Image (cartoon, rainbow, N blue to C red; front, side, top):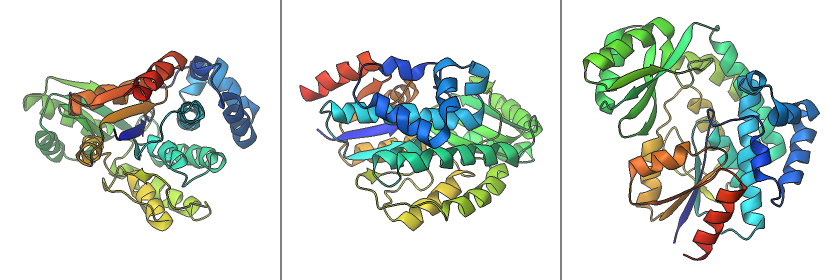
Length: 309
């Protein structure tokens, strides 16, 4: 048995999501560390909302790191086996770095809040957009983006038949129509506040690089497959460079999962609220054992299943 832990990005957040883990060890300690890092108001938004505040990118990103890390700490405290490899989808790569021992939780929260802020500020509100393209070959999605003109790229290669595009709002709209003309089953605009991972995020990447120069990173204690190169990286300087490029480069998630499976991974565990990555894993390889630690009940069920495996 070889276990991979994967950490979700934005989109799975919900008000009160930490309460789903109530009663698990380490949860209160993670709450205290989050309060020490970002203040009591952050925990109040996470627990009580309102949803409009939680869904602001500057709150969503540290909230998702907090929930994913709380589930991971609880898993290990309960005797859950350590992963042989970790990865995270977009923002989730930061949670994976904390789990891998490269970045402290206390340093990660202000880092991801800064990341969210500079990504939001890189493109004026209403000028950028993202859309999900369903059931169209990756190369045809790229072809549609190239033909649309303007700034628009395929930015999330999530699973076979699920690609996300991002860029200038008008260019994204043209690319959506071209994707449908090429045979896409659907082209759905996404309710996001910025065109994440598109080339429009380069200014954010430059500001992130400056911030990261002041952040202490260690070598990873667990192998981590990054988004931008789909490569294991342990050197702190190269990790920082990959995080900068990740801001304005595609998330190659399907390739990352396949790389883990090719290395002998038999079980993929999604660590954090929601079950998005577990669903993508099954689409990428229906034969792999996949679990989601979305709350206390599912964590305990996965623990029992893997301890008995």
